[in-house]
Image (cartoon, rainbow, N blue to C red; front, side):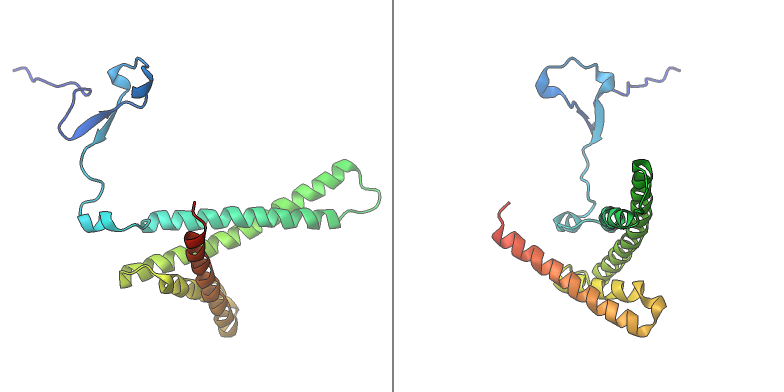
Length: 187
């Protein structure tokens, strides 16, 4: 008994063919076209109405941005400390080596620290949003407060309280600045 197998490139009711160069009259064989699903991205309409990143996207964004910003700031600080460590009689090759070593060391250290702060912040913010089902200014303030407290918890209660207050104020200032920027800078 022969089984009629349809080709992978025929149109299916659950997929559509995507041609990335359809407006450019480029001859492409059908085997190189992409089959994209026609089903909606979200299962429930309530999920599609939320204009928010998922917790995984949030985690990746804050951790990656924190690591990048910390690495750049640390490398910049390392350049200055490398220049300060010059001694009389150093050759140009030795001076460049000192700058590269100190900027690499400081960049890694600062990048890891700020990346961890972003990781903790994203986790706490996603947890608060999951519990309260609201994403407002207070969510960011609570996440900043918790991040500062958790990040400095190993240094004692007083240090955790001060860092938590600083984190809450910093997160509130960033959110308020973002709202002001949205209102007055039309981009």
